[in-house]
Image (cartoon, rainbow, N blue to C red; front, side):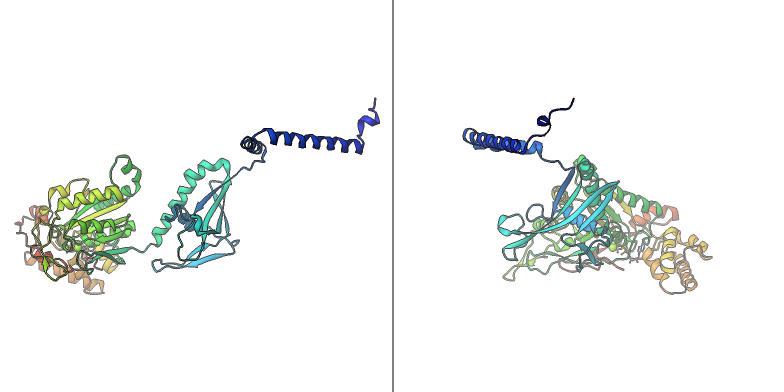
Amino acid sequence: MFPSRDMAIASPSSIFSAYASMTASVMLLRTITNDLVPQPIRAYLTNTFRYFFKPRSNTLTLTIEEYSSGIARNHLYDAAEVYLSTKITPQNERLSVSKSPKEKKLSIRLEKGEEIVDWFTGVKLNWKLICSEVDKGNGSSDHNRNSSTRTEKKYFELSFEKKHKEMVVETYLPFVLEKEKEMKDEERVLKMHTLNTSYGYGGFKWDSINLDHPSTFETVALEAEMKNYLMEDLNRFLRRREFYRKVGRAWKRGYLLYGPPGTGKSSLIAAIANYLKFDIYDLQLDNLVTDSDLRKLLLATANRSILVIEDVDCSVDLPGRRQGDGRRQGDGRKQQPNVQLSLGGLLNFIDGLWSSCGDERIIILTTNHKERLDPALLRPGRMDMHIHMSYCSYHGFKVLASNYLDISSDHHLFGEIEGLIEDTHITPAQVAEELMKSEDTEVALEGFLKFLKRKKMEGDVCGNDSSDKTELNQSKSSKNGCKQKRPVSISKRKNSAGTQRRTRART
Ligand SMILES: Nc1ncnc2c1ncn2[C@@H]1O[C@H](COP(=O)(O)OP(=O)(O)OP(=O)(O)O)[C@@H](O)[C@H]1O
Ligand SMILES: [Mg+2]
């Protein structure tokens, strides 16, 4: 029944001799293989063997380097850095703190070697910031040319289970990018870029200052319907990157703001910039003479910005407008400028440049005289939306009363004001001026009521300021039975080149 003792346990000497003969056979086989099988085939067989028999990990690691192509920063790295700063926990031991002049708050970032665990839709994602030193000579990280021979290469390692690869690439990483954009927008300081012409002949540069204009969609007196329509239009524009690409259009949108002076055109531009968190480029065409000036300046504008040309009817005219308006050559002689800017040309130019190298651009033109503009400029695709900024309505007055006097509900004088304001043509700027005359609500409103009555007594129901009323009279005169006033010249803006026009962003 039981196996014999010899069969059950091999003796140590027999095991040793079996091992010795097997080793000798392997050595012999290896020598024969080395002699007979060429080296490349041997290497191939070894790799294949290793590939099939290597223990498998179910973790995938993505590396996200700081510089994507040597000198260009990797946007995903920057986004991850900002995003992960919101995920810092007490477990983290080393953080770096900094603040650039542009930033409003301190920025806290991970230091090298630090790890973060993030959870996204139930999936665990491990982040680690790696920093290694590399030789500049190997070309992998040569952005820091001032340090000696070695430079730092920084990258994030993002590890997760392999089965989530698709979700991470298609959902999680875009989410990180989107989050960073939101956070940047929140803390972003807006800039107002204006032309600096003091760079000698042909030299222009954008100078920038912080745009600290308090105007918002809440403070601008605009009909509620128009305000909502405009905000929805802006939101739709921002959402539709892919749509613009699909239909083959440049991702840009043009707005024309027209109406009499003091009706809030510049205030609305500031409100739009604050709403979108876009910088403003205030392009004063008076200062430009040649196409190449314009080309240089437009190429120097950034994406996600608003290009503003105020009083466009005064800024651009047919060639010849600037006769005698030359710039000095090196020898001091006045050179007759080769004026080539025309409105259509300018817009074609902007269309062309922006179609090829700009994204998320808004252009806003303002004018007091829409009727003077070239129809080619007004066509959809150029000026997609025309916004009429008109005289102050009762609704507009209530917005201003809330802004200036903190009156959010009705006031016993409002009824009388409503009756009068619709019959007079006063601008929001005039209303604002009157409401500012006293800090006492009663006194300010009574003063404003007197002002309205005086205007009515004077028979100034078609407006009293020296600006043009063309638009106004077209829209309100029939209602009031007023005769249309002759448009008054606005030559005040037709300054010679180089003369600074009045400040745009009034507070
Ligand atoms: N619609 C408005 N809502 C709120 N405030 C306004 C409005 N319109 C004018 N104001 C007030 O009047 C001042 C002048 O307005 P703004 O400069 O925006 O007018 P504008 O239409 O650009 O005038 P212009 O045609 O002369 O450039 C602003 O600083 C603001 O205080
Ligand atoms: Mg203005």
